[in-house]
Image (cartoon, rainbow, N blue to C red; front, side):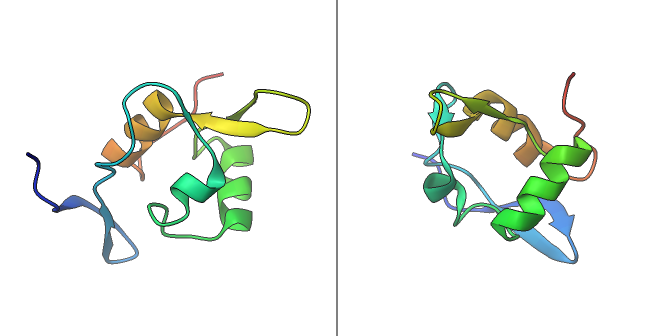
Length: 85
């Protein structure tokens, strides 16, 4: 099995946790990401708007989630990540 190791991509001098529990396919909501993302929900929203974090997908009128494939791309390179238009 995989070991719990931090990725090598620093953000402000700290490294991100490896998203081992995040499946490669599917969608994740904020409650699943809260422990994996090193900033607040408001900062995530701002980065999403700037294209520096994956854009959420509206599954229903009141339910939004992020694509796990895009989240894994972001975890691989959080500083260089740019959302596709």
